[in-house]
Length: 268
Length: 270
Image 1 (cartoon, chains in turn purple, green):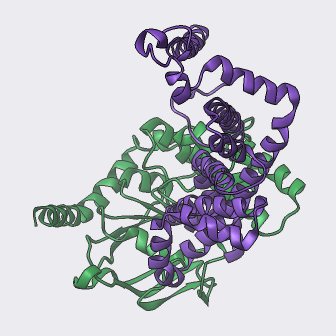
Image 2 (cartoon, chains in turn orange, green):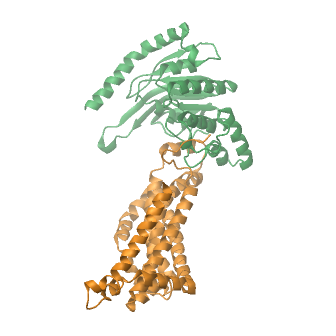
Image 3 (cartoon, chains in turn brown, purple):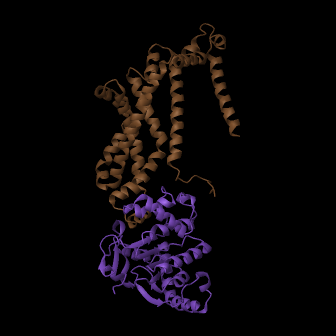
């Protein structure tokens, strides 16, 4: 069953690219639609055959690896820094009602602000290297993690808390053995979104001004109206995001073994 | 000899929410539990039984009156007591062994020694081979066993139990009650066992304390249970002595139960 679905998914992918090729190749359908200029469709939508050639050249020639590495670094750094800050802040505000009341309007305001407009400011502060992209990613990741951890702290079961107190846990131990595990479980449930946001921050940052990274490649190609290279960049980014998502799913499954899954039977 | 737990004129009044009148859950309760005595507290639902237990645990400070533990007034958490809650209290992110050894870990016991003692206790509550199961992989009865081991591994002198088996089915419940009696008879701790099930109270205890309906709950009767030990909770219920005691206590309780029922009904109606 699973194999058949995989096969169907692959078939659909092939069909999409085949249709795309048929509809854009200047020697196939377009001459019948636009007799005066058969290149019109290819100009706007690119041609899969040429897109794949660009991708092939990138990987065979080795030019893409440097850019992928830069994007990966930015994504990873943005995620880690944003998650740590969000976790710390979420724990603090979750446990201190006074701090929470004080910061509440500021958090709401900063979350409502479209953070992409900060990109130019970060570029002035951190330059055109990776750190301005990391900073943008951090502002996106932080709020997702923060809200989840805050919620996680608020929703710790009071019975579990009282039980832990009765077993002799002090304040520090409560934080370490109850609040932190509970908060991190909420953190992991937002892992996919958070990593995705780190990735968005990295690519948008590159796109707005950089000297390397996949976003930079796309921006360069766009400047030259090279639509095939733009699509090649998008394709590589999508594949890259899928790989990252797969890794995140693996990590998640390892770390959340204690979470009940539906319909799980006891193996004896 | 000072009593293990002594309530003296304990009153608990809670502030009303959003301007409602303050609510007195427990009024003027004096009650003592001797060392090694198993005392059950029964009363109609919603009468403030758990409030009393929270006071004994040190989780709740009484509005008036004092609580002393072996003759010393209690301040802060009662370190000599183990508390078994009615609701699920295990840490879901820790496996059975991790939950059982939590208290030892908090006390700074060496990890390997804690694990060894944890395994011993898991075996003692009949969960050998379940050490690496997470709470959601265990049945309700198994989770209660883990809770029991988690508390008893710390060897508390006082055991506070808040309707611990009320969520279990009848068969599992009687099994657990017998196991509790077995564990308890091995080294007699002082037990306060809260329940609304009179049969459970009689079959387990040395003494049954009956509470009035809330609000302002207070004890309205105490009945010594002089049934021979060791007991089998399933069999003892059929004995004529048991039925006699049950009748006597039930008569004194009936009025309060009806009162409690009427109040709950009025509250729902209003």
